[in-house]
Length: 431
Image (tube, rainbow, N blue to C red; front, side, top):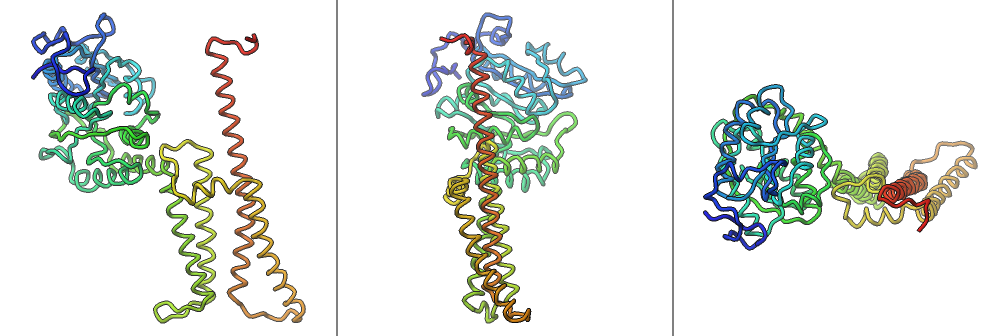
């Protein structure tokens, strides 16, 4: 296999000065060397003394195959001999300033200098001798990110629990593909290669295991090109640190909170439409399955409308007050975001409130003139009460949305002023 040229994104070539014939010791570089690495290989570790040596042996074989200057960065939080073993193989060891899988990677990325960055777990589950296949596939396809897919490849007996293989990983991958517009088969594989240019566009902030999801979510939301290469997944050496249900829930929670369109807009719209349909059927006297719906169905429909509207407003709040990876893109949420201003929402809410209130006042007048006699319950009474609640909610929701917008604008301006004051220019000094 010939050395690849990372500057020629058409595929492998012989244009680099480095060749596969050079000893691997000359190809592994550290910050003390004058050579800039083409490839950075990053391993997060925590007490991986049982397997890191074998992983580094495989990495050295990959480096010899590729024949390019490479740095190995081990981001370590161990209490065993893991860092000593890593240094003996020429690795640069850095220490994260906070605990967590994602925190380890973020610290390593700060130190990485290569044009291509490979990441993977140091527990022997991934065969790092396959690094050349991932890197060369990235170069050949001009991709931004390449995943080593376990689910599209081979999983050796005992390497992955049945629940993870057939339920957890496929389900989490399906969620991520649906929410973030990706089309990957194994979203939570830890064996990946990404270009430096792509990595610098990703806003990766999580400290825990959800970091694996965040990278794919960010890449999908930003329209980056993601490719996959089938790999073999091996049984790990050492004690597993993954907690299935806790870490699985963290992935799901992170995906949902960063996709408010699916968390709020979809269920809110569904409940609201269901409530309107139910109220319409009652008002029209249309039987359903031979049964004529009554007052209680009208009440249930009204509650569904109000609850659905409330949940939909949460989508607006989350978009205004936070910066989710995948902003809601459905027409109704976008319309609500524009409509829920003090002027539009306030006026519209008052109109709806006034309509319901006028009907309620007319009902009160009938009750008074009838000598406080019990009035028959009619569905329009319930609809009027729903309109009153809907109008009041719209008015106050509009004010809250406006407050959140102003707060976010103030923070943006403060950040801009702070940046202007620390970039070498003193605003008070004048131009």
